[in-house]
Length: 152
Image 1 (tube, rainbow, N blue to C red):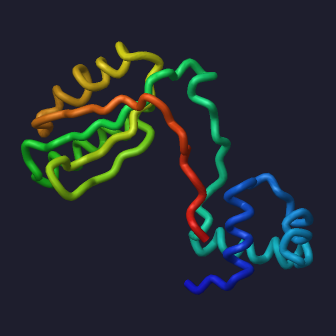
Image 2: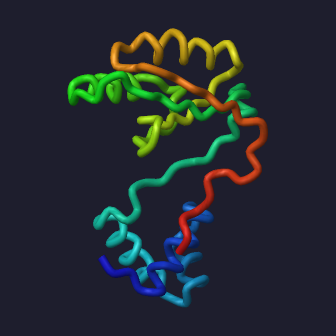
């Protein structure tokens, strides 16, 4: 899919504030509200825009510990990997997961209320899985740049 400059500017504005109305976006982009609406709808239909969500403050919700957890697998058998991914899907504390190259096979972003909760995720959920060989965690001390908008 080819994005023109107006599409890129529209996406940049939506990443800053997805609540902007078509009228407000039209004023920013020098387009009519209907033109903006059609562009937004096309970007949604083509899967460029995958959804809209509110960003919440974890600390204000009592979620005071964030960690990145690296998982090294003992086996890479397809069923073992599928089983592990299904496990990750069941845990609300695991808010992101990636497969990696290098020593670790997975990188998990985990947010919990406290260190005890993080300990339970690691020792009661991840390590008991038959396919897991090793888990290493890094606790976030300070987040100075939250998930930023994609570069447009």
